[in-house]
Image (cartoon, rainbow, N blue to C red):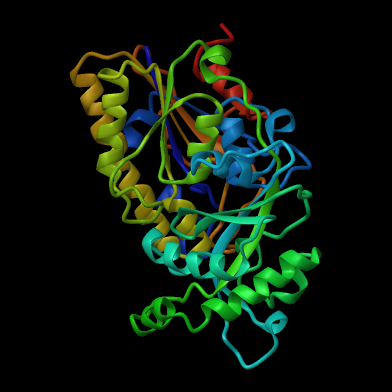
Length: 402
């Protein structure tokens, strides 16, 4: 038996008036997922533990079977693992987004945050901008590391875990209220704006109609993570396919195989087919028992507030990953179980994450479940299948609890 998780980041949503009270999942044309859903188990799972902030860090730990209340030590440390940062026990890792804030003729704290991803800036452009920041701000205490696209890392030697606000939570708001209380972190953010605002890369981006990456924004602080080995925990050899450093970091911490896919960028135009091909190879040639396919695009479109593009991301997952993957496995007579779900909702109305439960679909090629309904939030809620502790779903999926 092979096991595949198809994780559409932020795919769940709330009913949208412009969609006649339906959600993007319900409206999206997903013939392959719908065909499977009619003979699958569907239900709801609550991936964010009560009292914890909704994010892809806690949610994906849950989906992978790790109780965030036990294993979560912060978001950025997981990303630091992915980009090869060798953290000391006393280090604090902090996510460093390169974001877009308004360039009004007002003090820094009165600017408005416009875009948490600076038009999904390329890693190449972001690396040049981060080099400019490093030249002026880096020292023995604060070290910057390049990640992917807008997502980068600051390591604070002998640091402390401080409360910091994710930029995607405060889009369209004046930044002053959400700046760090720590004086040095706050100062570095302000100085980064002065460094980046008139940088040639950003001048060129504005001329091209793109948002400038004109400020570093710190959030997601945490200490060195310790995760149990996935194989020891589940008895399954596992592989991770994702463009996002967070997911790669979780996989590295869990001693799973991390598979890089050329052209996978975390955006709407990511290499969906490449991810499908990598999953087939991981399962059938490299003899992994389990593969986790993570697609960031629905979440990014939710943050952008675009239900049209979110629907397109969901349709792409169905057309270019789920359909061809299932066809290939069936064509080779491979028994498999497929779990399709989001990690958390990212409602386009709010443009940020929520803690609501999300719908899951569990298909088993060796059996058919009586259901007859399409996969969406409404239909999943109407079943009696519900996991209040999200991390328990993985054991159910892997049949460990039999």
